[in-house]
View 1 (cartoon, rainbow, N blue to C red):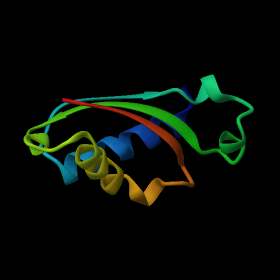
View 2 (view 1 turned 180 degrees about the vertical axis):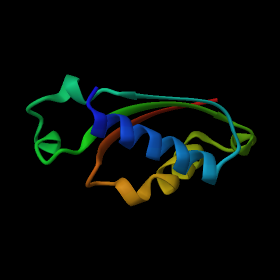
View 3 (view 1 turned 45 degrees about the vertical axis):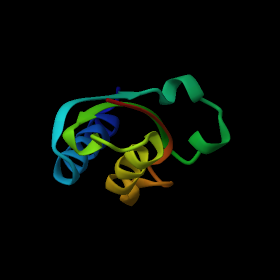
View 4 (view 1 turned 60 degrees about the horizontal axis):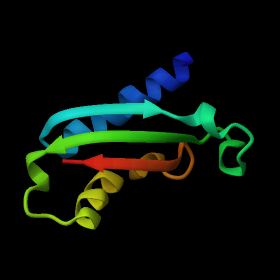
Length: 88
């Protein structure tokens, strides 16, 4: 993982922690699995987010994902091309 990729993940973590009460959070950069993919050509990455938050209680999957997308919207689509979101 490059220094820029590490900085991105830290920024994503900070944005999520600011937007939601986080119980557990892990962000994986899967961009190397998508080398050559059209969305990755401009430098945008593919990420897998494992997140647990009390804010998700009573919400359906779409509502949970919307909270994550809203928290990271400043980076979509320029730095984030794709997200895989696993919520609890």
